[in-house]
Length: 416
Image 1 (tube, helix red, strand yellow):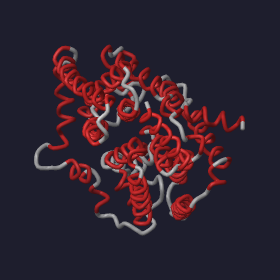
Image 2 (cartoon, helix red, strand yellow; image 1 turned 180 degrees about the vertical axis):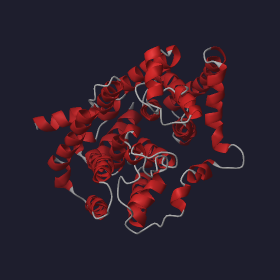
Image 3 (cartoon, one colour; image 1 turned 90 degrees about the horizontal axis):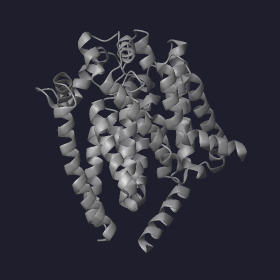
């Protein structure tokens, strides 16, 4: 029991631990590996101590699916370190799907604990972004030596805090923004929550990541419209009124920051980054597909070329890599078997989640966000994009203990 509590505490401290790891990595301390392993071991402990005892059909099928991918990859002839990279950052992280299904994650402890680390990192990142101390500029330039001069300038205009890329910050802020809207919608609206979503919005704009920005816009629109579909209660009217004021304030605040805080060069880079999804005659999807012309002529097999083969590690080793489209990477690494398997899994989760839509709004929103993000990122094989968060939410969708907990919350809120 004590070990289970420790494991639960470690996983609930995910954002804090990865933030410390990111800071350590920037400072050259190199603690990323150890904290990463602690999280993984905690997930494995909860899996074997709790989830194994309550195996269902979908759990067995998923384990068989992952085993098939791992075995087929092991028989492929490619670098061993790439195979272990894929095994560690794609296959083993899926264990958190089972963690999300355990009774330990029926409540909101994991999500409540993400606010302070994300806000703290964002505040530090904002200071580094605006002040730009010389040592920080030197570190950023050193960490982007493989980029072209234009790309290096672009990376300097993006708020990324302790990391080379802004994924940890942008995706973390988007997830927290979505969670705050959800809690504001389902319970009493608090002033500090409104201030938090203001702050998160500005941080996401400064990270210049299209998927998180699109997600928070869609999340806001969804909750606003959905509030009209519920029973006409005071809390929903109050929610809409505050959201109306918030939207106006966000627009005015964004204009103020753009006109008075940021210089012209940064603004031009930001605008170009955000609107490039629909520039010229090339769509964003076509642009992403065009990045991997080398793979268009490569044959796709049933089992694929092996997990991790075209990962970020392969990119660092100057090998063929697919770093910005999960669908293409999954197709080439795990073949038709892997891509179809993942698609069927996500369809199953969405369909089951829709059966209890009022209880699964938050988790389904997260899943849809990641499915959209997979067009331009690799969330299934990049822990920096909070893969653990995704799999925990996927597990919660079909977690009966979680559904009962949320149903009790829903009934209590209706009584008040």
